[in-house]
Image (cartoon, rainbow, N blue to C red):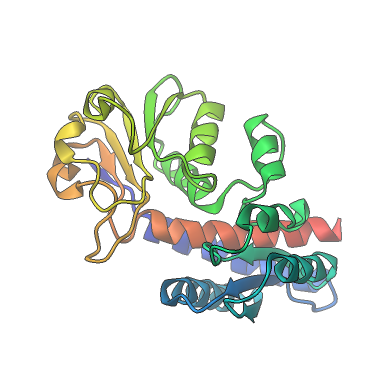
Length: 279
């Protein structure tokens, strides 16, 4: 049984990004790459996530710019802010913190982000290019998961992977990435019939449904690879890990598995975007 430690790999990635930041500064007359984060409203969890990303930027030497907008911000106002960042040559990456208030058209705002600065992989254009095997930044969490699986040399080709969740920034891009890696993919969700029977066939199970311990341990067969992309109060994920960890071939702990990889991937994407801007 292998513990897929995202914490360890994320530390290695941060060290590499730090080196790349230094190289960039040497080539760019001392300029520092900047990740801009947009926070709309005062949701405490969202504020915490943004702060974590800013702290990570600080650790590796990236610049960060935090834009805070009131909850009453209209879609048109948020679009105008995104456009200003698109045109700002000092900004290499743009992150719009999810979720935004309900009255804002989140998808329209995501899609307004320039593809070159879409380091969180949230645009429809980026997803479409990714699905077709074309260059694009993948959504940070699924891209981090794929990086983690490859780091630990988890075989994907030809294996049956079940992704439980269909969100546009996690479940759907995760399925596309696994398909591009030659896995056979089933996309399930909370309304899937006979879900336990489907999961018992899977070689790889990805929990991305957004409900604490929705996926029961008894639904997962012995020897499966278990990836839990959820995080909820009480330090539990979307999968009942306590009932399956010792029966799995490999699993991601909660916390310390997928979460650190999301932020590390975001830093890496920002650095790549910055390097491309110099080309």
